[in-house]
Amino acid sequence: MEYVANKEIVAKRIAGIFKTGEVINLGIGLPTLVEKYIPQDVSIALQSEIGIMGIGPAPVKGSEDRDLIDAGGSPITLWTGSCFFDSATSFGIIRGGHVDYSVLGVLEVDQEGSLANYKVPGKMVPGMGGAMDLTTGARVVIAATLHFQPSGASRMKRCCTLPLTAMHKVNLVVTDLGVFQVLGGRFHLTECFAPYTPEWIQERTDADIIVKNDYRIVTIDVPPNPA
Image 1 (cartoon, rainbow, N blue to C red):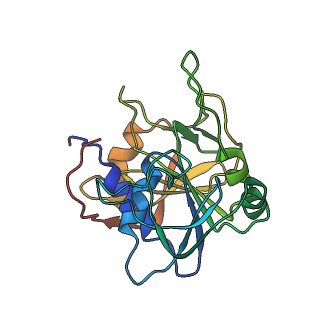
Image 2 (image 1 turned 30 degrees about the vertical axis):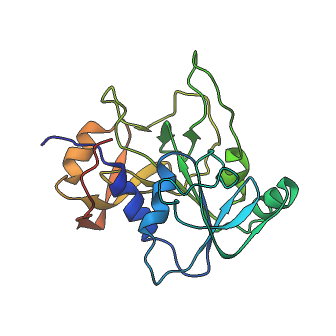
C-alpha cells in the first residue's frame, strides 16, 4: 500500500471534534487548515495568543488586510463580535483554563504525551511562541501532524528525540492515518483512516500502539492535496 501524505485529512477530522460554544486555539502551520472544515452548524470562538478572539476564515486572495494576521503572520478575517486585547489578557485566558482545545503542529510526539515542535538542532529557531502556555492551560491538547517525516520515519515516537516543548500534555494525536488517544504511556488507536489498516500503521510506527476493541475504519473525503 502506497502512502500519500495529506494534511487536509488531519484538518477535516479535527474540525469534526468541536462543539458550539467552545474556545479553540489553532497553532501555526497545519492547524490553520482546520478552520475551513468547521461545520456550518457549529459556532466556535477561535482565539489567537497575540490577542484576538473570533478569528474568521482566511481572506479571499487579493483582499488581505496587512493589519489582520494570526500568530504565524498569515492573513485572517474577523467575525462580527470579534475583539482585540493585550498579551497579558490573552495569556490570562490561556493560563486561566478558558481554552477548550489547543491544536498544535508537531515535529515529534511520543507515547508519554510529550511533544517537540519548535526546534531542530543546527537550524534557526523562530521561537516557541505560546506553545508552552497552550499545552499547560488548554483543557485538551491535540497534536496535529502528518504521520511520517520526509525521511519516512514516523513522527509518533516511543520517546521524543528533539528538544521538548512540553512533557506529558498531549491528550489526542490526529495524523493522516488515524486518531490516537494517549493513555497510560501508550498510543491507543480509536480510528483508522481508509485505506490503511491498524496492522499497516503498527508496522511502520516507532511507538507502541494498542488497537482499541471498538476502533472504527473511517473514510475522510477531502480534495487530493499531497503535502
